[in-house]
Length: 239
Image (cartoon, rainbow, N blue to C red; front, side):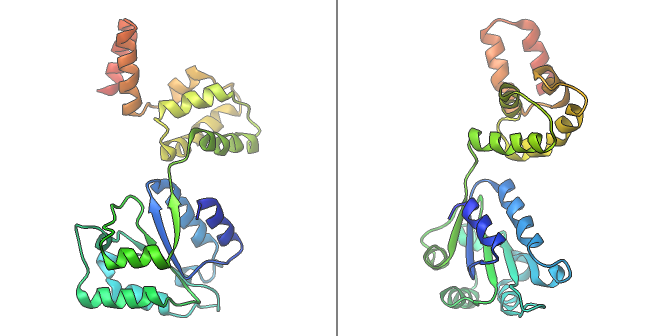
C-alpha cells in the first residue's frame, strides 16, 4: 500500500488491525505518525494513541496495550518503534516470539498495531518477519522523487500566496541534496522572506546552509571549471 492510500484509510477511519511500516523515508513516516495521532479525538488521545520502544517495554506490554479497549469505543493505535528483533542483530526470547506470532496470526480487530521498521534491514528468515509480510498491511515509505517534492513545496507556496520559479525550487532542493526533512524544515525561512521579497538563487544561497554532500559535488564541479574563488568559498563552507 502506498502512503497516499494509507492517508485515505486514516481519513476514513478504516485502519487495518495490523500495519507494517517499511522503506527508508523516515521523515515521511514521522509525518504519518503525527497524522495518526491527530486522527484521534484530543480528549482521548493520551489513552488511545501509544508510541513505544519495544526494547524498553517488551512484547508483553505491547500486546497488553493493543488488547486494551479504547476509552471512547473508538480504535486504539499502538506504534512499535525500534523493532531490532526483526533484524539479524537481535532476537526475542522464545516465549515472547511465540506470544507475538500468536497475535500476528489473530490480531485484535478493534485496535491497530503498527510495527515501524523503516530504515531497518529485515532478516526475512525469521518467523516474525515472514508472518508480518504475510498478514500485515504493508505501507512502504519510499523516498519521494523530485516531481513529488516539487508538488508538495509548490502547494505550500500557493497557500501562502507567494510566487517562486520552479528553477529556484530545484536549486533549493539540490542545495539540500534532496533531503526531504531539510527541505520541509527550512521552508518557513523562505516563506517568511517571500512575503516581502522575490526569492531567487542568491536568496537561497544567503538563507540556506548547503548540505555537505551537495557542497562536495559543487566543489568538484568548481575545480573542474577552474574557478579558484568559488573553490575557496565552497571549501570554507565545508570546514
